[in-house]
Image 1 (tube, rainbow, N blue to C red):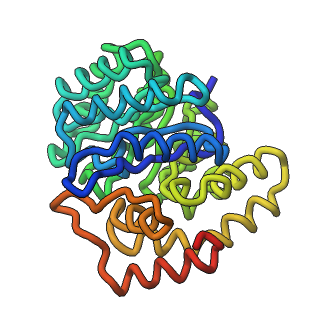
Image 2: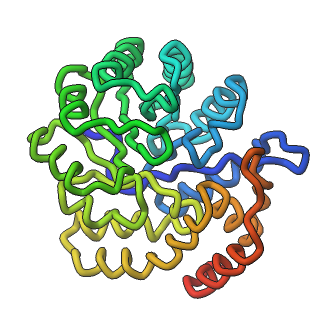
Image 3: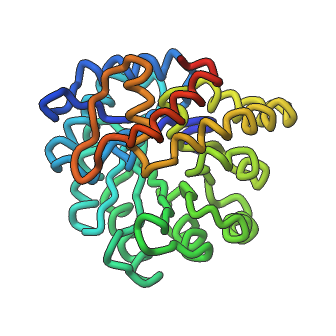
Length: 294
C-alpha cells in the first residue's frame, strides 16, 4: 500500500526576520494545508531549504511537523544526503520522530555510479523500518537514477517503495512503469506534469504548487482517480501559467515570495538563495491574481 495517494505538499520552512526558523508560522502552514485537503506533508525537502539548514534544525523541523500533524495525514521526511552515513542518521531520527516515510534524494555532487546508488539507498533503507521513496532530480543533483536501478531497488529492498520523478523524461518514466509491473509507487516531482504521470500509473504528486493552492493540486489527482479525466486535465492546464511563474527562478525562491504576497510572512530565503527579482515577482503576482489567490 502506498504511503499516500494524491497531492503531498513539499512544505516551505518559514523563517523569522533574523533568519531563525519560525515554528509558530510552520504550525499555521501545516494547519492550512490539512484544511486545504493536502494528502501528505513532505517536510525538509528542497522546498523546505534542507540544503541551508543545519542537521539540528533539519531534525527539529521534522520532529515538530510529526508532533503537529498527529497522524491526521502521512508525514514524509526528506532525509537524503550525498553522505550515506548522514542520510542514515537523518532517516533513523525521522523514524524515531514518527515520520511515516522518508524521501531520499540521489546523492548530489558525488555523481555515483548506478551500483553506487544501489549500495547507498540500500544501506539507508536497511537502517530503518519505515518506507522510503527515492527522489530523482538530475538537473539539481548531477546524477540520474536509471529506470532499471529504480525498479531493482523497489523489488529487492522491502521498504523502498517508490520514486518521486522530477527528471521530466517521460520515456524513462514510462520505462520504469513498464519494467516494474506495479512494484514502484510513482509520484510526479513536477507540478506541470501531474496528469500525464498519473496516466502512466502514478500515485500522485509531491508538489510545490500545493503550498499556495493545496485544493487545486489535490483535486487534479482526485478527479483523475475518480475517472473525471476531463476535469483533471482542465485543472492541470488552468494551473500551468501559475506553475510556470512558480519556477521562473530556482525553487523555493518564487514559492516563498508567493506565500509572502499572500500575507503568510514566511521570510526570505537563506543565502546563497536571494529574494526574487522585482520583474519576476510582478509576473508571479499577476498570475496569482488571475488564479484568485490575491
